[in-house]
Each structure stands twice: as structure tokens, then as C-alpha cells.
Image (tube, rainbow over all chains, first blue to last red; front, side, top):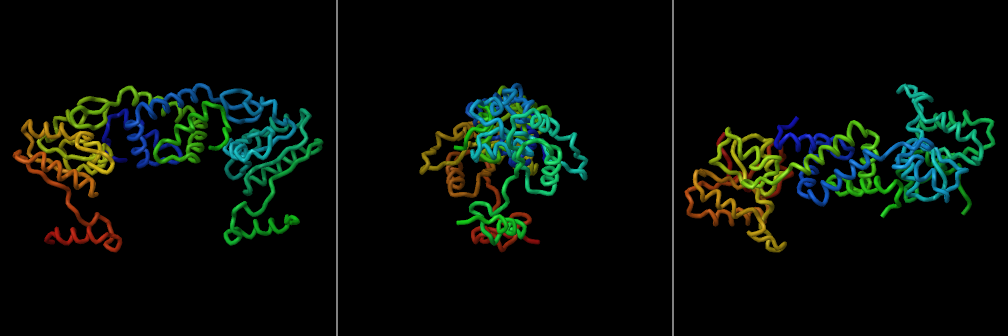
Length: 201
Length: 201
């Protein structure tokens, strides 16, 4: 714990900034100072934006996305294909897929993956509502876009089991060489998968 | 510019966070998401702390420090030696010296260094008030603790000229090997200075 060098209000700001992911204790001090220097242009607007976010942001009761609307902008967008649901672990994954803009469908955010070792079971995830959405009909495809980790794959299998018997096509993301990736740096599993799923040129 | 993936309020928060030093566009998104997830523990308190800082923080009219008091806590501290002033470029340098806690004196923040190429002249810095403080008497020593850059040294010489004729001891920080530093990684200038200022064991 470093010595307090500014008033308690500034110290409190520094301590809270240090808890923001991406900032540590040292960069939090630098950030606080810059915020104070850019009081009108940055500190004021940021305080306001955070206050607005605090008041308005909520979890979408349909898909688990975060938004100021509930149901969220994506769920209520009439131009989207509601018959295709992409299942993701986290809102960050949803944002990443939206940036890719490859599909124009809806999402379902699980809020994590099954992890018996960490005590995360099916009831700790946003899983039951997914089965309900799938059972309600009108769903053609569910794309399971969880991370390619052991927990992710376990979760994918669990979801597949839960949706068994429904007339829904259940798919997952392709494994392969990342675009721009160098073979030399890839693990054997990825290379094996890329070879197995090779496509004709 | 990446595609907007969340509501305008969240996008605005991300854009403002991206302007905080230490956070870029990518980490700002991650930070925003974590802030939203930790709404009660982090987002709310941080919004409040920023709002308080925005309302209360001001520049000390005596030394140029930032604080919620004016004159600042350091200038009004009766246990400090007001006869010794450490001159620094920036509040961050003041904080660094306060953390070192090697001296118990007061400060004067210049707000930058002379830099003719960048159009920064004496009137753009908090220099005149320093001369006024020095001329007002009761000052025994002024320690010029500017960075060891060309601009810093130019500024140091300018200050020394301005204070010429006053009965004040003007000193500067010692040059030498940083504590914990390895000689192998130091430049010739530092090593030369360290040799010249060698002390008896």
C-alpha cells in the first residue's frame, strides 16, 4: 500500500480505478491524474456515462445480453432471423461475433460454462431458458459458439443432450487455422482438425 | 471504427473509457463489460467517485498541485518545512516524490517544461508564481527536480537565471546509477555522471 499523496476523494478514485480490468495500481494513478487534468472533456462526461449506465443497463430477460432495453436491441430487432440462435458463454463473445457481422440472427448468453470442479452446475447457468426458447418452436438452428476449452465442449455436449428430440439443427463453430495464423505456431490439435476438415480449393 | 454492438449509452461509456490513459479501444470494451457486471461493487462507486472528483478537485493556487482543498493539503500542512520548495514538472512527479517520503517540504508544479520547438515559453508555465514565492522571502532552498531531459535541463537553467540575486540555495537532483539498476543497461551519460559524482565508501 503506497503512501497517500492526495486527498481522500482522489485516493478513493485511484483505488476504484485500480480495480478496472486493464488498469493496475500504477496506471490507475496516471489515469486519475489525466482524468483530473481533462476535467471538462473527460472526467465529467465519463462520470455521467457511468452514472447513466448504472441507472439504465440491465440484463435481457430473453437472451442474457446487457443493454438499456429489456428485451435487448438484438432480440427486438425485426430485421434479424429469430429462427437461428447463437449460444455464447459471455456477452464479450456476443460482442465479438456482432463485430464479425457474419450472421444476422439472435443470441443466448449462458453466463459461463459447466465446471464441476469449480462447482458450476447447469442451474448456475442461463441454460433452462435456452431449452424453453428451443421448445417454444420456430427455431431452425442453434449454433453452439462456446470456447474450444474442455469446459466449453462439456457444456456443448450437455446442451446437445438437453435439446435431444427437438427438430432443430444443432451446429458448432468450425475448428481450423485462424485467418492470418502461422502453422508453425499452432498446436497439433488445431492442425489435425484443420487437416480433417480440409476443403477443396 | 468497429460496429456498434450495444446500446448508445454503453457505446458512449466504451468510447470515453478508451480515452483513459492505459486503456485502448479493446480493453475499454472489456473494462465496460466488467464494470456493468460489477454494477453495485464497482460501476456505481466509480461513477460516484468521479462525480465527487469532478465537483471538488481544484488546482492549488499556491503550488499548482491538485487537491480538494485550495491551498492544498501539502501547502497548509504545519509540519512541513515551508522554507524548502521542490520544483517539479508535473503533479505525477510530486506524487512520486511524496511516495519516496525523503523530504518533508513543499512543492511547486510547473505544469511542463520550456520547449521552444513546441511553442511552450515561460508564460505557458507556472513560473512567475515561483519567482514571486522565492522573492517573498523565508525560502532557504529550491530543489529543481525536473526530468533529466534536454527540455528539463533548459527549464532548470532558466529558473536558476530568474532566481539570480536572491539569497536562496538552488540545487538539483543527483545523477547516478538507479538503486537496483544494472550498469550493463545504463547509458554512457549516466555512467559518466555516476563516476564523476562518486562517493567514498
